[in-house]
Amino acid sequence: MVILGHMGQRILVIEDDANIQGYAKTVLENAGFESFVCGTAAEARKIFHSVKFDLLIIDIGLPDGNGLELAKEFNLAAGGDPPFMFLTASSDLKTRLKCFNLGAQDYIPKPFAVEELLARVQAHLKLKQSRDTLARRNYELELRHRARQDLTDMIVHDLKAPLASIKGTLQLAAQYGLISDKDHHNLLTSAGTAAEFMLLMLNDLLDLGQAETACLKPDLAAVQLDELAGKVSELFRGWCRNRGVSLRVVIPPESSRLISDANLLFRILVNLASNALKFSPRGTEVTLEAARTPAGLRVAVCDRGPGIPKEQKPRLFDKYATGDRSQGTGVGLAFCRAAAQALRGDIHVEDRPGGGSVFALDLPQPTKAQNGVGPGPRAR
Ligand SMILES: Nc1ncnc2c1ncn2[C@@H]1O[C@H](COP(=O)(O)OP(=O)(O)O)[C@@H](O)[C@H]1O
Ligand SMILES: [Mg+2]
Image 1 (cartoon, rainbow, N blue to C red):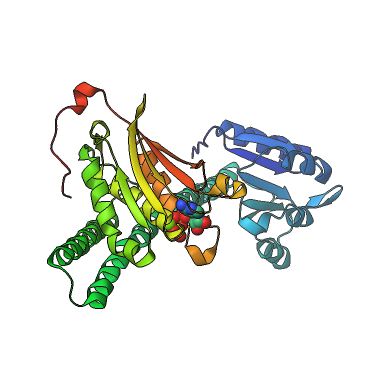
Image 2: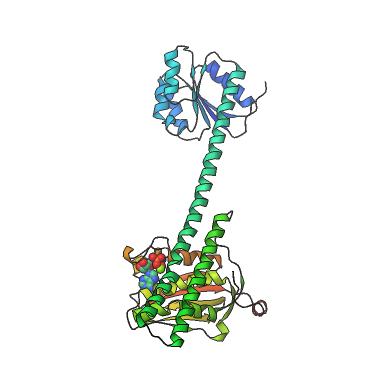
């Protein structure tokens, strides 16, 4: 029988009998394994802590110790890695049971035949490989699951703003009873925008369930930023009226056209505007601005709120980073950063001169020639 090991698989043989030591080394190396041998517990300690092994073969009787004690000391049973087996001249049941009770995968009675040693080594290395593959797959699945959960959390979080908008609109309608036709029309439009936005996100949520990988995939097309900003402002109309704050859109025509993902951009703006308005004192104004930059376009949301404390800034865009738990969950800005990165852009916060914060989203833009044509905001 010819059994070939994988080069690079390392086996440590701890055995004091020089004949068995040499025999095992030759057999293992001929089969393609990298083998290390030592004859005492002291040598074993040194080598075990400096090399990563795939399998250990340990003699029970050692001149300066006991193989069973050594396995305990190396804590081999805890993770089952690396697998280990004992070599023993004793054939009594008690000793063999002791080996297994210690977590050993196997024992080899001395004297042993080449074929038997190799067959056992091979079987345990195969098992180890399967275990390692399973652990790796499990880890990858866990990462994928977490990424999917993150995106799900973000979508569920972003459903709050339009729902609050619809609720505010209904409250206004009920509160005023008789409202003008124009107001009536505006309120209905704003509730319609909110509902449309919620539907888009519910579709994203469904898509996410079916998607092979969980990541934000931008769907690039020509976007009319002024129209998009107008929808954001519509979304918060009722909310602003109830809270005595205002949202003004300042987007010059030369900054109103870009290539981007309308849905992702809309969600970023809704998050930034919702934060800015939430932290705005009564009577103040939030502005949603845009300007061309050498690399592309900067969209900024500026408020007159309390600003971001210096110590909060480094982790502000991390998930669950929130100044005050009662103020929110800290999912919105994490989404904004992930979406900005998906759009190959960047987002940061600055102190606003005169008080408040500026959340600036920098987006790269293709050259003018590429940017000239294309449809308006697309429906998804
Ligand atoms: N415009 C702002 N002014 C002051 N603080 C802000 C502003 N935007 C965000 N923050 C701070 O950042 C935290 C995280 O915001 P965010 O990620 O949007 O959380 P949430 O998803 O709960 O709204 C908030 O709890 C708040 O402390
Ligand atoms: Mg928020």
